[in-house]
Length: 174
Image (cartoon, rainbow, N blue to C red; front, side, top):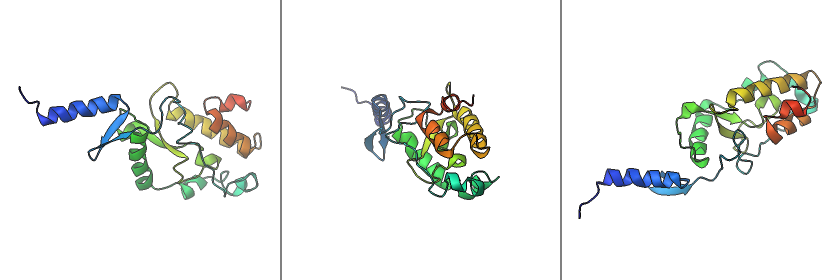
């Protein structure tokens, strides 16, 4: 009986585990703990969203409505890149190229999302019918509406956490 070369066995095992929703990390198999079934939304069990307590309706004129404010609270890329690597595995993405994802704030910083909370950050794909760039457009329109007084901060946050793809229409902004 001939032996199968170890590299081939390792490759085939890794492929079989990936097909089963598992990944190999440091010699052990880990189940993907977050589902892609909700895309273009994150899995709410893994990424429910989190708010920055410093941003309220009463503070928007000194926080989110100030040009450049988000840069003062945005976490460094060293933090978000490490988190993106970890979460790509947790979401079980077969494409593990970091450049294909944005480590996105589910509740965006410009709407008072928590900057460093893992409950508010997730690897959002740049590809698909509703991609990260589409969400960015929605975020910008919501921030403008909040700062113009057309929509309350709480309503904008709720709309984006419920379903960012329908947030504008649900608030009568589309």
